Every structure is written in structure tokens, then in C-alpha cells.
Length: 435
Image (cartoon, helix red, strand yellow):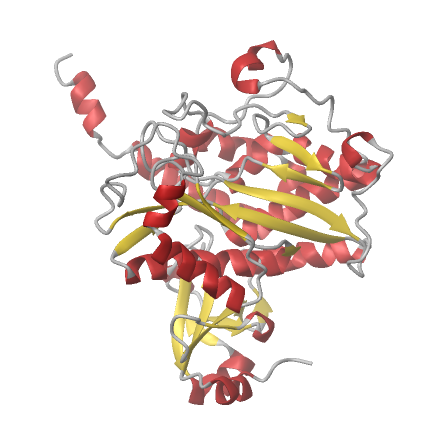
């Protein structure tokens, strides 16, 4: 039974709804709708001009309507008279095929039709920086190895505890928070869930973290590599697949190596098969490739992969199997679109299951120190253009995610790359002015 948002508003004291959708570049777009008007919006959606956001549309396109999915509604813990609700994009009565949440829902349905229910958890790292974005906000956070620094995390107690309190209030099962490997960097963890629910929570989490940081006079950034020499913002994703009832983990097999079943290996095989092309989704910005291809950081390690390899409980590879019945994809970064992250994982994994893909041999070495010893393992793309080309050549993955989405994404991302290439930088002047 669909939740009546008008009744929800009356029961919770909601004055306004934020009807929100996420565009191709991960931008969150919303209209602030008074509760008195939500009944009509729930039926017909809030109207937008799609061209005004990062969707492949023109000013001549008809209205895009964001129809709220009432099951996703969240009352803002820090502003109780407002509720956020994720929306599905429609145009002339049809789902918009390029819209990220629609892409994910289509793949969730495909998995369900094959008796599979993908569950995931994300580790969304972020920096707390000054309001102008120029530097880390904590002047005392200067250690070479700042990871888990208790003094540093306590100096940001007001921000971190407020966000965690809200996650607990929302029933997300928040269970730990820490200062991460870079100065000024943090990670907050909550329980894994069905892929669509994780994507909605991930989207809301980014909105919430930015909002609470601003409330405290700071700024939060999920940018993959905001500071030279420091570890970048990853968004590691833990993946398991269950039966449709969500009770049996089909990845779990106590008798198998690493506790990963044959189906788990095939799903992983799909991830390995498509790794270089899915990087266009998991690492979607020019800056992304300054994280996964970075030199050693001041802490001693980037904690980022640069080669397509997998292993057991070893954080120096693209994929690790930390325990039975799941694996961790360490490739995605903080810029990843929450909905497209889940979609590309499901698309690649389903292809692996259907083709019984072999993930290849695992490697149990320190890739940072001995990676040169691994032969025949593909390198991850060196830049966004290489990733886009790899994605464009991967017909199977493009079709699996959706032809309309793939065409739109490639078009807009190539435009972004071209804009980057035409931009003049200070480095060019410093390096070539006197040639």
C-alpha cells in the first residue's frame, strides 16, 4: 500500500516536501513543495525543465515530472517541518530512460526476475574543510598518519555526533564513525540494505552531511582528490546477493575458498570482466583519476587501486573478500552517483552470473609494493577519457545499463572532458611560458 504523503505531513507536522531527483552528474535537484500541494504532486509529479539540469535534453523538450516515491520519504532530523522524498523522472507519461534512479530500478527488477536480491553497503568518505573550500578546517589536524586519530575526531565531535544521532534516529543502524587516512577526512558507517534503499540513503547522506557542515560554518566535500599528497575520498561498496525473500545469502558457502560461493565468484567475475569500463561510472570526474592513479601519500598509502585484481582480506587490491558471503569493491570514489553506482554493479554482476564468468586468479601480495610482479592484469584507466572510451567499447555493459542512458551519459561526459581540455591552467603557464 502506497504511503499517503498528505497524511504523512499531517501526522508528522511537515510544512514542506523536497521532491528530489539526481541527474547524470550526481547533482541533486529539488522543488520545495508546500504540504497543502503534495496530494497533486504525488499523483502527477513536480515539473522541471530537464535541459536546465545535467540530462541530455534540449530547451524544446516537454516538461519533466519528478514523481515522488513515497516509500523513500525522510523527515529532516535537523529541520522537522521539511521532508525529503526521492522521485522518479517521467516525461509524457513514460519513465525517462536516462534518469539514474530509473536505471537502477530497472536493474533491480531484472535481478528480482532471476530470483536475486542485491544488497549493498557504502563507505562514503568526506573531508570537513573551510567554508571557502581552500583548506582543511582543523588547523591542528597535521599528523602524517592521522587515521583513527581520537583527538582529531573529537575536535569535530559536534558535527560527527550530530550526523550520527540523525542516522540513529532514522533507523539506519549507524554503527561506527572515524577519522580517516587523510587530514580532515572522516567516514561514517551504517548497515547494508537493498540496493535501491542504499542508493536513496547514500543520496540523502551526502545532502545531510553537507547541510550539517554548513550549519557549523564548515563545508563538506566528497571530491575524490581535493588535496595533493593526501588520501582521496573513496566510496567502497560491500556487495552480497540474496534470494528474493532476502533470507538466504547466495554468496555464502562455508566450504568454498574465502567463503564465497560459485554464484558469488560468477558475480565477481562480471565485475572483473567490466572493471575498466565501469570505471566511467564509479570514477566519473576528471579529478577521480588523481585518486586511483596517485603517487604515495603522506600517510604511506593511497588505499586506492590502479590495477584490476582481487584478493582475500587485503586492502591493496580493487576487490577484496573480507569475510564469507560478500566482497568489497574499492574502486568507486566520492563523486560517484549513488544510483549509478548500484546500477553498474548489478549490471556487471548479472552479466557475470549469466555467463558464469571466472574472476581469474586471486593475488595475495601487497599490490603497492609488489604490484609489478602481477602479469596480465589490466591497468585501470589513467584518465576520464580512457574510461569513457572503455565504456563505449563495452557493448554488453552499455546495453545492460540501458542504451538511452549510455548514449546520454557518454555525450555529456565527453562534453565535460572537452571543457576540461580547453581550460587553461596555471601549470601550463608555469611549465611552458618560457619555452
